[in-house]
Image 1 (cartoon, rainbow, N blue to C red):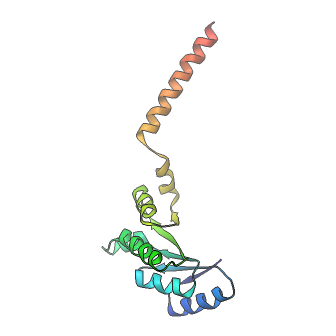
Image 2: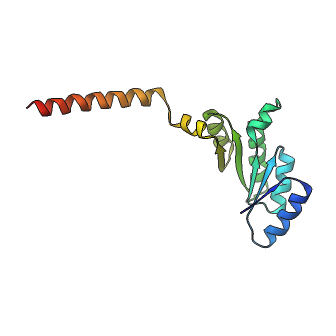
Image 3: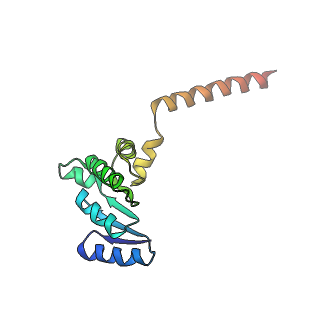
Length: 139
């Protein structure tokens, strides 16, 4: 896979590479209009940056929804890679909005595993196990 920026030159390269059967990830996508250019050029993946769009005060999640709707309307095969995810909520929301792939920091990945009820349940399981183990060893 080749990664190219969403520039005029990048889209030209995407079109040429796609015609040769090369999979292209068009990155640095910040608008639905740019995502249309990537799909029309034959991009295998487009990478919109949710967190960076949010940083500008615009709704990054809406960007994923818009791209998903457009790709669905036109049956584009380009996959959506939601980048710059900053929280577990971002992961859930982009999944609901239609993203196929995500990139995220290790910290966010770790946060996906945590839930207070999981921790509480694990403590209960271990406590019960230890109690049964102690009973078995006293007999």
